[in-house]
Image 1 (cartoon, chains in turn yellow, purple):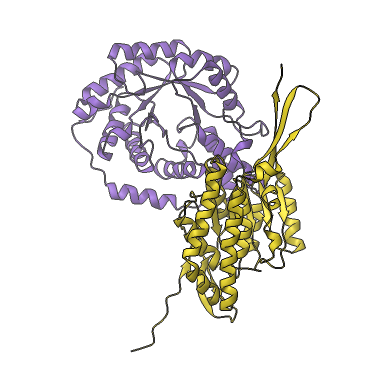
Image 2 (tube, rainbow over the protein chains, first blue to last red):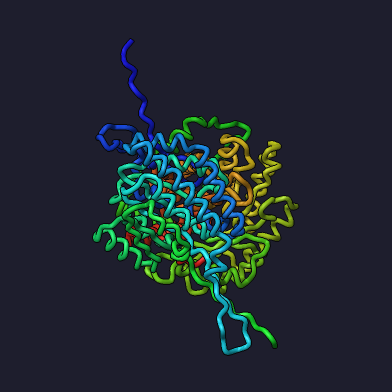
Length: 287
Length: 302
C-alpha cells in the first residue's frame, strides 16, 4: 500500500457567523517554523474587507444595545468553549512550532484573559463614568459608549493570544470588529472563529480575515465605515499609512506594539476605554 | 394605417426556464471596470424613479425626496439628477410643485395600487385624478386575479381604457410578476400590456416578494424585443423593487444592452424603480473617485 497523501485543510475566514472563502478564491500556504507546509489559508482581498466591514456594521446596533451584563455572560461563554477545546488549540499551536508547555500556556492565558474582560463589561462604565459639577441647576454626567466598527491588525508575534488580548476589550465595550489574523500563522486565529461560532456571540460581532497584510491594511484603515483601528504592527511605514488613512474620517487609532503578549499589563481596562466615546448628558434638576 | 395584428393570447409562448437563468448568470459574470463602470453608475443614477409609496407618506417627505431627486448628493452637484419621482396620486401636486423648473418627471401609481382590487370605474377615476394633478407618468397595476383566471380580454380592455384615460401621460403597466407564478405568464402579460398600448412595462409594485428578478426582467426584455420586431414600436422597461446595490443595477444594464441594444440605454426607455439604490450608486461613484469605501451615514436618506 502506498503512503497516504495527507489532506491539507484550507482554513476559511469567519464573517457574519459564517465561514466563507475569499471572494477571489485565492489561498496561500501556511508553513510551520521549520518551513513545512501545514495548511492553506484564504488570501483575502479588499473586497473581502469591504464585505466584512458591512457585516460588522449591521451587527453593531444589536451588540452595543445588549445589556453590559449579557455581554459579560457571552464573553465568559467564549472562555468556557475555549476551555473545552483546549487540546485542539494546544495541538494546533504545537503544529505551528511551539513547545507543548508554551502552547498550553498560551491557550490558558487566552482563556483567563477572556474571563478578565468578561468581568469588566458592567463595571467600566461605573469606573470611568463621571458626575460633573456644573454651575447651572443641572445634573450633569458622562458615560463611555461604544465607538462602532474597530479594525484590528495583528502582527506575527503571537498566534492566538494577540487576537484574544485585542478582541476581548474591543467587544467587551460593545464594539464590533474586523480582525486581520497574523499573516504567517493565522491558523489558531481562524480556528477561534469556530469557538465564536459555537458560543453565543451574534454573527458579525467578530469577523476574522486572513491574508497578506499589505494587501488589506490600506482598505481597512481607509474605509469610511470603520470607526477605529487597533494596530499591533510595529513598523513606522505601516503606522504612517494607518495614521494618514484614519485622518480621512477621523478614526480613533491605537498603536499597540507588544513585546510579550503574556505580559500582565495587557489586562487593563484602559484598553476598553481606548475604543469608547464619551457621552455627556445635561439633566435639569430642582426647577 | 393600423396594420398591427393582435396575437391570440390563448396561445402560450414557451419559455426555456433553465436557458433564461443560465443566460442571466452568464451575463452577470461580465466585468465592468474603470471608466465604463463610472459611466454605467452615472447612467443608472439618471434612470432612477425615486420612489416613496408608504401609507405614512407626508408632504414634507415628498418635498424632501424631490430635493434629493434634483441633487442626489449635495457635495457633488455635477452628478445627474434622477429621471422621475414616483408617488401616490394625492402627492402628485406636491411633487409637481417641488420639481418646478426641472425636467424630472412626476410618476403616479394608480388603479388601486398595489392590489388593483377595485371596480373599473374607480380605477379610471383614480387615473384621471392623477393626470389632472399633473402626473407625467402613470404606473398602473393589472388585475392579477383576472389574469390567472385566463380572462385575458379583461386585462387587455382594462389597460386600453386606462391608456385612454392617461391622455398625454406615459403609461407604465405593472405586471406584479411575483404573483404570476411562471415565466410563460410573465411573457403573456407583457405581450398583452404592449399590444394594449403600454409605453413601459414594469415588473413589480415592490409590495410583494419576490419583486424584480433578473430572469423575469430578461423574459420581459425579450418580449419587448419581439414586439419591436413585429410592430416597430419601442416599449420601455422598468424593473422595480429589490434592487438595492449598485452592482445589481449594472447587471441589469448589461441585460438591456445584450437584449435590446444601446438604443434602450437611456432614461427615456429604461428605469429603475428604487429608493435605496440611489445611495449605493452614490457611494460607489464617490468610492471610484476617492479610492476609499464609503459610509452610508454621510449620505442623506431622503
